[in-house]
Image 1 (cartoon, one colour):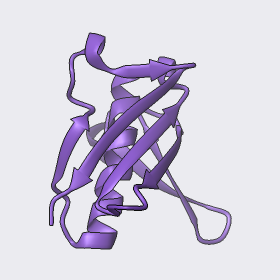
Image 2 (cartoon, helix red, strand yellow):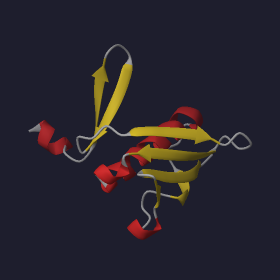
Image 3 (spheres, helix red, strand yellow):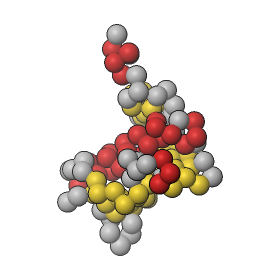
Length: 106
């Protein structure tokens, strides 16, 4: 029953040692966050393989941003400049990679 309640949510799985991976709708995306060197509250997130499930890719990107902001600034709030909630036509997708950008609130 608990598994059913988690369907569609990010599910953390412990894999070999201390590595943690999170699946979104059963898909493990390769996501990467890069902080701006001049303003480390600003960042860009890429999510490869977005065409597998665009809704899940959006959540994978949101998760990376939230994790970064919480771990570095103690706050999960993000001001998006290219966010996961944008309409499908406004999302920046290049070479099957979803590109998001935002800034952690301080």
